[in-house]
Length: 423
Ligand SMILES: Cc1cc2nc3c(=O)[nH]c(=O)nc-3n(C[C@H](O)[C@H](O)[C@H](O)COP(=O)(O)O)c2cc1C
Ligand code: SF4
Image (cartoon, rainbow, N blue to C red; front, side, top):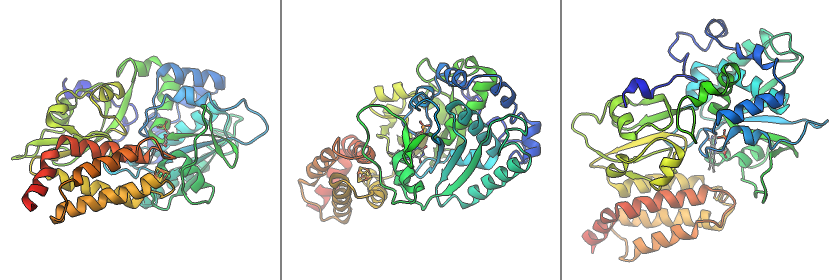
């Protein structure tokens, strides 16, 4: 597919406009135009439109957004909240910060639409602590929106609906991106994931109903409200309609963040949009959607399409769409070691399989690299991976198991060589 057919700019439409983050420029370029239509609709009709659009969460899991909003209980006297997840701490994922940098008013507009749909008057945006520059930029936009009467007691100074927005700076822990850990952190506690209920229900912030959505998910809502669900479903696949911001890092000629319709062939994206590998380099592997998605070999990449279902079919996941490109010549043992150091450090430590498992894998890989590994260490490593599956409070541990196991299984010869060379 040609680059022009793959790149569809909905969320990123204004990114290239000079000073697109400033309110006057944003207003001249279509920001806040969805609000008039919003207030002609009933809140449940907004939710219905989002359901029909098939909008899927962009924070990694791909959960359908509209049905999630419907988990909020009927409006009553209790406060209820929208929580926007801008933690973005996964290696290889760097797309939400484009929205903070280039179009923070789109996010504010999305928050107004989403708050109206779920009946919330208070929105919290939780951002990773290291994003100081982006936090400042977002706060400037929020200040502008308050000063212009866009948010506050009356939306756009006239609609009888209050929305207040608070930005919360995280402390820099990856696990605080997991929605229940994020809420714990927002409540002032240690960012530990909570046990999940058996059935589907909304989140609870200070025991009050809450919805957690990713930054890009919320930024996708104004277009759907203003232009209807068909403006979204005309792109992408049947099960994954619309677009997503895909980040590409590593030694391709044009690394960056590109808004693509779902369903593009990964090899076309790397070659046509990424410009292919830098001179003299050959593709070895791709970690497709942020660091916790099972690795794809160069042969897998030829079969990979960028939507959730296609990625499951080839044994990986789409995650956040952050593709990490790895060239020939890079040791996959080093890749695994690099990843596990991160996960070992970031495990919150509540669950034994995760706390101990990440440590064991880190230790075995270190010994392999240092040339002091034992012959059966690879089997032990795979065993440890299996103990991390299905027995933990959150999906951090199973995701670590999936990525590490995929690297060991697909590049086992590189691990074996280290043992054989030493023996
Ligand atoms: C370890 C871990 C880290 C996560 N980090 C993020 C993150 O940084 N940003 C994000 O939006 N979702 C993250 N998620 C997913 C959230 O738990 C949640 O599903 C998401 O924010 C829901 O929004 P969405 O439906 O709009 O994607 C993470 C999940 C896990 C298990
Ligand atoms: S799986 Fe790991 S990160 Fe998740 S709650 Fe358990 S110890 Fe914490």
